[in-house]
Image (spheres, rainbow, N blue to C red):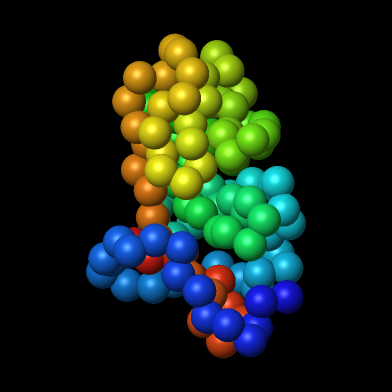
Amino acid sequence: MQTTTDIETTGHTCAAWHDVGEPDDFPDGAVWPVVVGGLPVAVFREGEGLYALYDLCTHGAAKLSDGYVEDGCVECPLHQGTFDIRTGAPCKAPVTEAVRTFPVRVVAGRVEVGV
Ligand code: FES
């Protein structure tokens, strides 16, 4: 559990930080859906890194939180296009447009997403 060191995984600015749980709520290699500031967000852990993407594929109406995570990418469950979970960049067709990213940090043992 990451409680001794606060981390921020991106340098993004945001309007507000929202608590989404404890670091242990997000197991390595998994994806979890949360609602942050009224927006659907998919939270990912890769090793010590935590990342957040808008939870809707840019190719169609599919939730990335229903996707499969492998090698730093999430595969959309509808047409198997993939996005880099760190940058939101498209990795594999038919996805051509990046998905929005959100900053993630851990403060005092709590995971926060900035929206
Ligand atoms: S809806 Fe995601 S790849 Fe088509």
